[in-house]
Length: 294
Image (cartoon, rainbow, N blue to C red; front, side):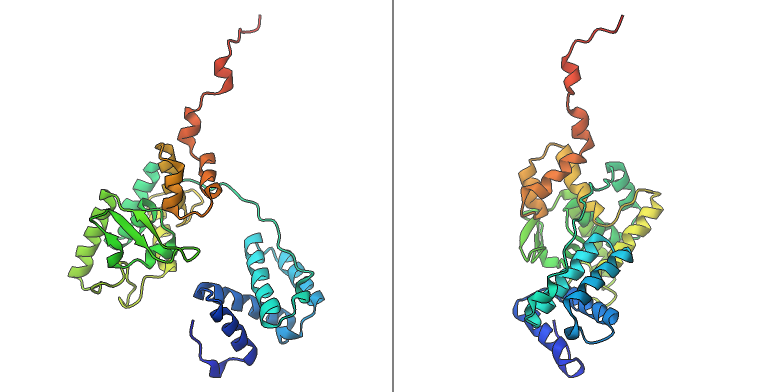
């Protein structure tokens, strides 16, 4: 992550150096800086002048403003890095506490709904990109950072470099998904929208990849066109990928590898929403012979 150090304060520059030397991702650095900036706005002065009580008041302020548990915890993590690492004053964080974040089961799109959504995508580029999100179970950031060289049609796999947790992995490449990608590739080459060896889904300037925001916008436009009323997001395609594989009796350990999950527990939660599997389970009452009441 590069910055013009002539235009930023020594304190901000020190924090940037601390994050850079620990090889934090650009996304993480941006989130941490935003957390400190927002706190400084609340405080009305430089954040290094804050007290433990100021931080406690800020957490209370965020809760009263209705900030979600996830965003609140992300803010606390950013501030924790600033005060403990950059300022070397861990005692200032003693009154801030991460909050419990309820884990809700995801809303799952059916096979028919995914079909309608992909058919409603605005052109071959978005149909292919959304097809990768569902057909390979990739995260949005993983989809947009694929290059043409990541598609291995001989081995029928997709190479995902530096996914979540900075881990490389291989994702599945089905024949149907490969066909969607070929249609897009031929269209992009004919329109000169793709550079040789460049991004698989380039932005308006093919030197840069398509943004995750642009892909999410395409998802919601396709969802509306397909008349899908469920409260779903782009990440729901990844949820559907795992759930539909599980419903077709694929090994959960294989699904774990395909998703890039470090812990099997994260994959096992899809058992809760695999409705086809739940319907196939024979309930304990079915083993009883119950006579109707006289």
